[in-house]
Structure formats: structure tokens, C-alpha cells
Amino acid sequence: MGQGDVVVVSAVRTPFGKFGGTLRDIPSIDLGAMVIREVLQRVNIKGEEVEETYYGVAVPGEVGLETDVPARQATLKAGFPGDSISITLDRACCSSMAAVRLGYRAIKAGEIEIALGVGAENMSRTPLIVPPYVRWGSRLGNIEVWDGLFELGYKGFNPVSVDTGEVALEYGVSREDQDRWAYESQMKYDRAFKEGKFKVGEELMRVEIPQGKKPPLLFEKDEFPKPDTTMERLAKLPTVYGSPTVTAGNAPGLDTGASAILIMSERKAKEKGLKPLARIISMIATATAPRLIAAIPGFTIQRVLEKAGLRLDQMDLIEVNEAFAAMPLVSAKILSNGHPEKMKKILEKTNVNGGAIAIGHPVGASGARILMTLIYELRRRGGGMGVASICGGLAQGEGAIIQVDGE
Image (cartoon, rainbow, N blue to C red; front, side, top):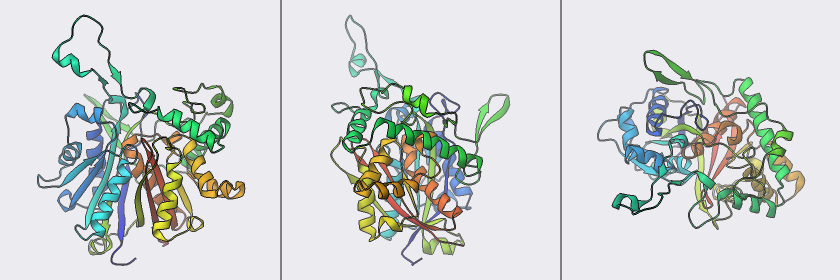
């Protein structure tokens, strides 16, 4: 590693909770504070040593229940001093990878040496919105409330499930293809879990949930996986929100969790005697036409490889966030130029331990999650290089290439 490198020294997430599940009532800001404390404790770094914290969220209505500045609130709750610097950012599902990227850029620029990238979301706490006219009074008639989670779309645009399904079909990715990928995601996660790959002390931390006078509830594993999934059950599910292919089975849930990645200049890591988990080779942000959300991870991987001067066949592993099953499949179509054998090889090293369809997708936390999942799996394999990409609302993208050195 050269002196100008940026390294990951600690990476952790909470277990992800399902919609309405165990973490339902915990504010995402509190989950953010928990994961911040944990990621620092693992390497004996104090809050006052972190020069900048970038904090990603994607459901502003939920953090709005605590008013605003979730990054500031979470860092203070985690014990950071009053003069600590933080910023909240919303780049939809890209948010926590964007948080890491902004810290990476600040370190590369020589402005700081230690940064923290965080993401947290509790989709179960998303409030129903009362229209603004209610504040100023209304005459006779019913008052309607708006559910920001319904249809998972943006005002004036299609639901993302519609755009995803239509674009998948345009790339020749069928409903059956998506169901099969969803099934395999569940099975891969189940195998990985049984092999001890998703355990407290590595990618996961333990969350203690107060129970009044009773002992706290210990939450130690992802809550969303469905190891009893079958292709037959998936095939029977109806499509959602008018999508031609997307169902509740080939999509992730509306989940809850937090993730954090601590990065440093290599010089600072050496000074502190910390052995890096990984080195960040390149990070990039992208965007394209709003309806092409299913294709943006593939375009992003192409761009981040080009920026780094590397080829896809040099990547040992690939992580593509399963916002829907279509995303890794369309990405593989793009990256293989539609060549069946190349596509097969790409998919064989994509999301090898399952993805968000099994693990869960607390949107603001997922970008950092796929990055750390990639890092920990490369470490188990003795090192190598990997590329990760995630899509975000209205076809935004984030991508990263990381390298893990062998022992």
C-alpha cells in the first residue's frame, strides 16, 4: 500500500430487522449511534479522533420524527464531543456508500486523515403524511393522508417496481429469471449463515433492546431471510404496483438497520498500529435517465473499472445491491454484452452469500452493507479485489473497488 492510500480499518452493521419486526420502534438515529460506538470500539478509536462523519439516510420522514440533523444527533448520542463535524446526506439507497465516498475524497485530498461513513434507516417508523392545508384549517370533507412507502415511487415518476420490471424485460430478463435469482439469494444466504459468515463480532454487532424491568432482548441475526422459499411459491406471487415482473418475493423488504465504515489514510492507520481490513482503490458516483434504475449498477461498474484502469475479469467478487432481483441480472447482461457464457461467469461471483432479497434493505444503510460484505468475504478467501455497486432512486449509482491483501 502506498502512503496515499485510503484504508478501511473497521466495518460493522446491526442485524437487519424486517418491516414491523423486532427493531420496529427504535429510531434510526439511535441505531446510528449504536453502530458508531461499535465501529470505533472495535479498533479503540475515540469519537474526538474522527475528523468528519458522513451520515446517509433515505427516508426523511422517519428521521423527521426527531426533527432534523440526524448525523449531528447520532454522533452526539454516540459520545462525540460538541466540536465534532458531521453532515447528513440523502442519495436514496446510495446514501451510505456515498457517505464513505465523501470521506474517501476528503482523505485523498489531504484535508483529513480519519472519516466515518454511516447509514441508518427504520422504514417501520415512516410516518403517514398529513397534507399541508391541514395546518391552516380545512372545511367540510375528509382529510387524506399520504403513505410515502406505498408504490415506492416519486411524485411525477413511475413506481420504481414498474421501471425496473419494464427495463428488465427490455434487457431480456424474465419474471422467471428474477424469481430464480431471488430463490438463489435466499439459499446462498442460508448456507452462508450456517457456515458462520454472518456472525456477531465480524460483520454483525449485537443490539440490546431494553425491555423495562426485564432483561434486554438480544438481537443478533438478520430477521428477514426466508430459507423455506421455493420456486413454486415465488411463481404464485402477484406482481406489485403494476410492474410486469416485480413481486414481493423477488424484491427485498422495507427493513431496518444501520451500518458504519471507519476509514483512514494509510499513514494514520500505521501510526495507530491498525491492520487495514481493505484498501479502497476507487469510488465513483453516477446517474442516468431516471427510468433506468435497473441498469445503473452495470453502468457504474463499467465506469469505476475504467476510472481505476482495471478489467472486470480482475475482480474476484462482485456485489450488486438487490434492490430487486433485476438489478444483478440486468447488470450482468450489460457487463457481458449479452454473451451467455460471460454472463454466467459474472453471476457466479456476484452476491455469493446472498443479497438484500434475503438480508434485507434498510435503504440508507445498504450501500455500506454491501461494501463490508464484500470486504469480509474477500478476507475469508485470503485476499483479492472486488467491485460493489448500488442503485438509488431515479437511477443514481455508487460504485467502489476494494482490495484485500493476503496474510
